[in-house]
Image (spheres, rainbow, N blue to C red):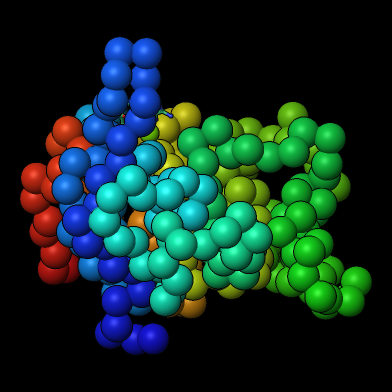
Amino acid sequence: MNNQNIISIEGLKKHFLTSGGRFTAINGMDLNIVSAEFTGIVGPSGSGKTTLLNIIGSLDSPSEGKVVVLGKSIGELNVKQAALLRRSQLGFIFQSYNLLPVYTVFENVEFPLLLMNLTDNQRKKMVMDSLEWLGLTDKVKSKPSQLSGGESQRVAIARAMVKKPQIILADEPTANLDAANSHNIIKTMVKLNEEFGTTFIFATHDDKVIGYLKRKIILLDGKIASDETIRK
Ligand SMILES: Nc1ncnc2c1ncn2[C@@H]1O[C@H](COP(=O)(O)OP(=O)(O)O)[C@@H](O)[C@H]1O
Ligand SMILES: [Mg+2]
């Protein structure tokens, strides 16, 4: 799918019904993303970053307009089709890591593979490859409570990449990390992007992260205020 839009957004609006009436979180957006981009959605709190990522990730649907991800029109997918798209093609990284506390590191990374048709050995190899890539082989048996923030986020990256998804969506992945770990995490994502061609889209307002972006989209009040490709 190289050089083709893997995400195309046209006239997107997202309204939420609140006690105070209708609130428009995304207010008219057009955006195309091609394969292997490393794009940051930058903007202040409340500008619509999470809402946009949720729609691209088929966790929510557009109120108006069209959002096509890997050939699938998000607003037209039923619950099962949306789950299949997420499971087969998308990886997610969250600000708060979202690791399952009762499971080991190995089991957390294995989790997205459980619904796939794989043998135990295939699964084990994929999990170990992913953990090795992230330098976490000595943490295989640890529980999330025994990990630092940086390690937890690396486990979350291992979990997001284990099935080699085409697209990884990351919502403020460095918001809970100190400077050293933020740099480490973003460098890991750049490496993943360059080594495997994984398309990254992430929301951030972290200045430390912004310098690594290859494309920077600034969101203000649910609209794109600027869209800049950064040449390195
Ligand atoms: N489920 C919801 N119901 C009502 N309002 C929402 C909902 N989700 C988000 N919003 C509102 O939409 C706006 C954008 O939110 P969000 O996408 O989370 O912004 P960001 O991630 O940039 O901080 C905010 O004003 C928020 O309060
Ligand atoms: Mg947010």
